[in-house]
Length: 68
Image (cartoon, rainbow, N blue to C red):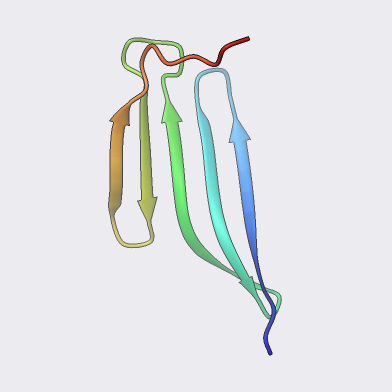
């Protein structure tokens, strides 16, 4: 039986968060999907999710916050 793991890579900047998801099979990573939260904290903030073929979803995230 082959072992498969998922790998999440996150890169954050001042107003963007990027994430890539890979499946690791037999030690080799294969791209699965990516997400981009862009212009975070602005009225134009957007979240885009893509797989290796195309854009899956795009939605506004303007005004969303996490309760503290």
